[in-house]
Length: 122
Image (cartoon, rainbow, N blue to C red; front, side, top):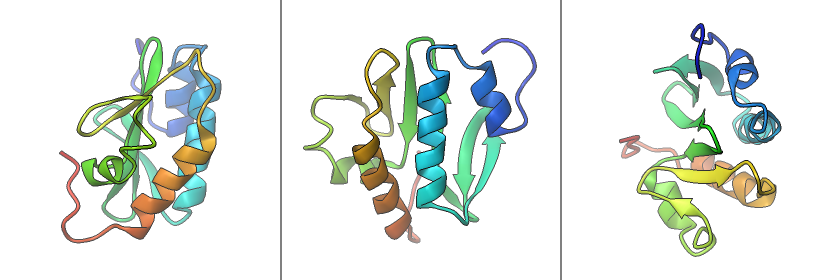
């Protein structure tokens, strides 16, 4: 994402690849609805939701977006995520496929319900 560094999630999404912008808007709305008290901020150049600690983050890439809900949240949904590209901390969703909205809502709600002292981002 070239150019000026975005200061808001809205600016971040507008600077993302055009193919990803609708996906990112959907993802942002799902995350915000799951954590309505969380504040959307930009940290390390990416949108984060904090309340006051890390809830989740996402990022835009050339052909996909990534969601980082914590390793524990991804493990909890490992069976449902088998068809998706994941790593220990990230779920990658390609722009050329529909956004799995129901699954993302479940992951986001799980993350909000299971925030605790042992949370780790990295």
